Image 1 (cartoon, rainbow, N blue to C red):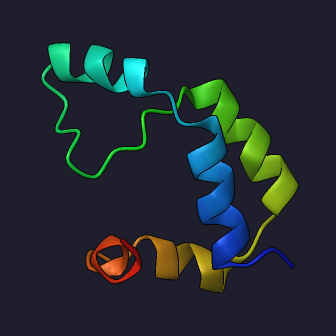
Image 2: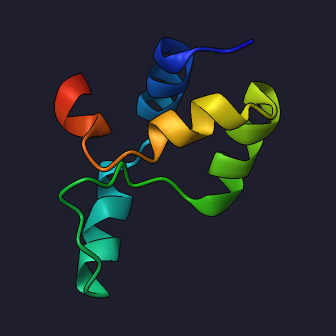
Image 3: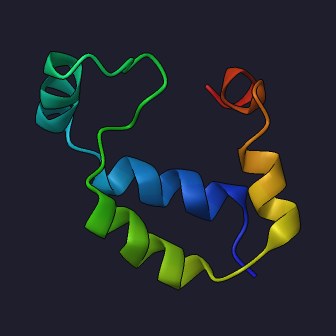
Amino acid sequence: MKGIEFILSGLQCISEPDYLKKMARFGIDISKAFGIRVPNIRKLGKQIGKNQELSLLLWKPDFMSHVC
C-alpha cells in the first residue's frame, strides 16, 4: 500500500510550475494546486492503486494545511 508520503512526493515530482500559470489564466484558483496535467495524475493513480481510506484523507479540506 502506498502512503501519504509516496503520494505527495509523486505529486511534487510531476508538478509543472508553467502549467500553474496556464491554469491561472483560465481563472482556476491555484492556491492549492500542484499544476499537474490529468494524464500524469492518472499514471500516478495507477501506481497508487485503490484505497478508500487514503482517498478520504486526501480530500479533507484541511489536509494540505497540515502537510505544507
